[in-house]
Length: 329
Image (tube, rainbow, N blue to C red):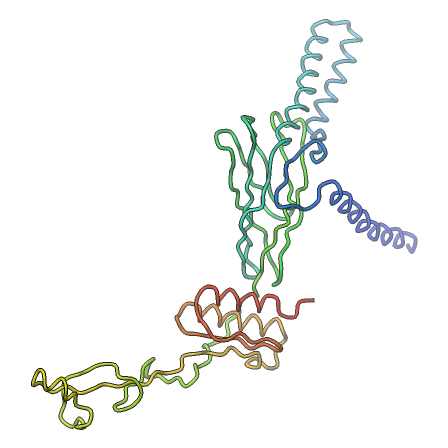
């Protein structure tokens, strides 16, 4: 039993080493780049399962033709053998010369799919059909370049935790034209995006500085900023009457003044004492999402980091990015 366990452990330790050697070999042969054109050095090709069965069938037919000295069987065998060989060339040419370039990316919240755009293009009049693109854990997309010189493909990668998401090498493959061979390559377009913390319900947003339930504007007479005139009402103070306006129109108006509230909201790390780091970040993220729907200014205070209150899309992205990258190892 112990020997079996040791063998299994040795095998499991060997797999990462083999994978690491394979990655190093690919990095030397096909280094990460924003744009890659596939060529002889970067396209690999092998028979599919159907191709292996087809080759075995050809071998059986050759043996039968030799045994029976049947010219018809020879003719059919050579015809099918020619198809087999020609398929190698067509499958390889369906990837060779194809250019893949990094496009835009879109950030996501943990648990959602992050979006990566890849631009597939060609040079000259060659056509490319049934090109499969995608990452290991995502659904492959099929692209054809027949009438268009380039195509923009949106690919999605699942996320599970916050931080910088680098999807790694993308699989590019084709089985064109008849599925007897598979040509493929693993391309690293050096793409990455940000994954924000997963928003968790955190209750009502904390109150703004100096806020109250009366609204954004507190109207007072005789203080702060002049905002306009209103009709005179019995009991209005004489010093608030607009005498200049009365001299022109002979109608009484009362001056209006206002004091504005401070609508800035601070999102504090200490609001969620007793929670672990990820739960705190998720709840702060929830508040950011809620506040971004309004025009209120909000700021963020984390240990060692402070972002001044502001509003707008750029500020939202800045705050979410700070939450996504906070204390990442």
